[in-house]
Image (cartoon, rainbow, N blue to C red; front, side, top):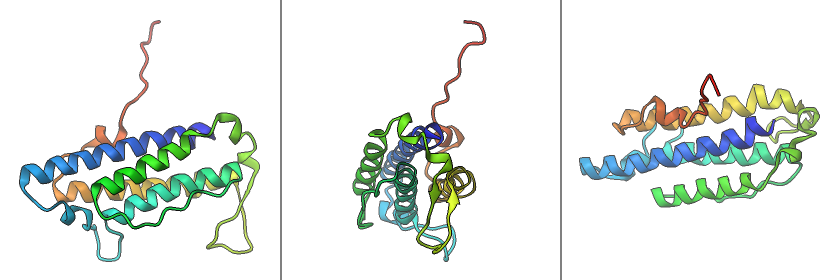
Amino acid sequence: MYYQTIQQFIKMLNNLNNFLDKAVVYSEEKKCDINNILTARLAVDQFNLIKQIQVISDNAKNTTARFVGQEAPKFEDNEKNIQELKERITKTSEYLKQFKEEDFSNSSNQKITLPFMPGKYIDGEDYLIEFAIPNFYFHFTTAYSILRNCGVNVGKFDYIGSVNFKPLEE
């Protein structure tokens, strides 16, 4: 479960930082206010880009904390600009990097409780597959889509990021 959480979350957080770099370039080239991008949303009842990034960060750190039996660091959700969002993403990645594969040895059988489901639990493996991963990617995809909708030049390979292809014959 280490790879599906830590390694994947770190990779995608790095991709998210790259998205924000491209948003800055776009706003400078088009001479548009970056705050319009940061406060953009896809639908009136969805979070804006800032909140999507905060939720991505929360999902990565809270999922990890639940699996390793620790309290996740608390961030104040007060980011207002690209630099502050990038700092939050970096803090989240640094938190994740402290864990090793052995920290996850018991995680698939762990009883995971969630604050919005009092009196209930979900097994670690089910939590990962049924909630944590889909929720992370829901907000990640929404952040990506907000940027695309605003005109920022991000594409599929920005979303996917690096892939560990190996030669067929070694």
